[in-house]
Length: 153
Image (cartoon, rainbow, N blue to C red):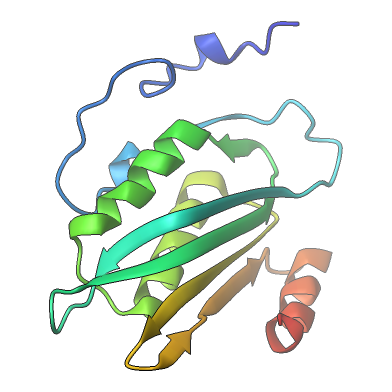
């Protein structure tokens, strides 16, 4: 069964791609959701995420989990991987990273619902697990976001 994605102009899928240094949201690509009539979850785990502490320049390691309910557009996974790799040379606080990823994906996809969690490994004996979510305003997804925020653990 052909997905029709080859006609969508995806630049990263199936090709070698030269990475630009640092954070680059323009590398993100999307394709048309073939199941727009269904509500369903898509989840990505990036267990080897790395960013830099903006103060010390030391690496911070995390697992980044992205879950969303697509509407018309879906994120292409190779472009997402390349985008997440771009944080390796970027200095941001953990909370900023999680919110930046979520906002970039909202701009790209306009999902019904999305949540991003960062499970950062301890530095100085403390782990930080920032969580951000969004539900489309005026819909049941907004209500889900309001419910999941305090109950996300």
